[in-house]
Length: 510
Image (cartoon, rainbow, N blue to C red; front, side, top):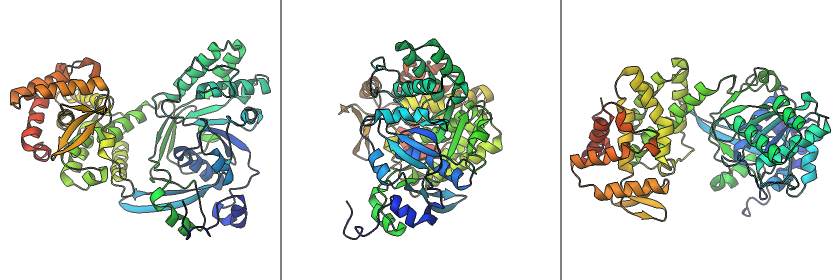
């Protein structure tokens, strides 16, 4: 709640924007056509897509605004409309070794619609001939088919069903005109998000028995792109917002914050560079006919750096990413793992990969973001499989030997999962005499609890335990003992961590 000191600060709204046009550089012009429909009004899309559209508008390259659809019954559309779609984005981080802060007033959103309160208003958007792009971020669970949705629902519960109704309305409004299809840009954090969205829409259309000609129009007139998004958006800066209001000269209840770095890879036709000139406007956006190399880069370097380092860093006594980045030994371990063991396994040019890695390390050192190591360790078994194991196997194929640090990371993961008691759905580990929760799927936690309960403390016992972990095909997709020398190396590293401590064990890696 605002204090007495902030009551006098004017509220960001249409009247304020008219009185202070210089703040929005004129981009709050309501005459710009609505060209984008966006499912999701949360901090991420506002700190990523809407920020970019605002930037294109300021440079006269897009000249279009965004209509935001509230995807669930409870949301922020009312607040968004009260502020005339405007909000502030504060970007903070490190660039080329320097701490930077940038603040912008974003006015690319024209209005918000709550389909639970105004379903016909939602459908009416389909009649707008200027509408061309559909953006979404409905969480990873949002792109999921639901057989329970009905065509008569106003609105149906799932995002794919809402979208199917909008597409049907569009098809009818323009008599199946192939030129009135949409470009869909889903930003949900799942692999092949566009392919999955298209699949769920077609499943919904089939469930409803919709006309074959409409289904063909979905297939041929619309472009479902796969995208890869990368930016940490920290959202509403609750602990410092009153100070930010005072500095800005207005109260903004939708104040948003993010890191400086951003990347958007869109797998789609090259013509998107002209229709949606994000790269031309200076944004880090790549339109490609194959996003796999970029996904491999992100998973291997960004996500892989986290998963390779975090269990070991936590065992070494650190609690946040920024803390271990300030430690030469642990951050050096991570940087060597990426430079020497991950980058050689990727297909993009080495210089490009090294530049991306350098940006990742700067992001990890961002003093404005406190990223808890324990939160990163959630589901570390599946994360190791998805983010690190592929790099390890490719390295073995290329070099004929194990990558030492990626192997050590597996041993550190096993030791991190050391616990014999499950409480409140978490396996309980101990560090420096204090408990910490280990969170993963229940069968995984139960297996670790059983293995560590039987552990006798000997070197032979370490080998028995690590082999029992490596042989879990349902965890790793294969028996990891089949990888040459991995069983021996993981056991030796795990024993070193248990007997000498993780810091001393890292120091011995040459």
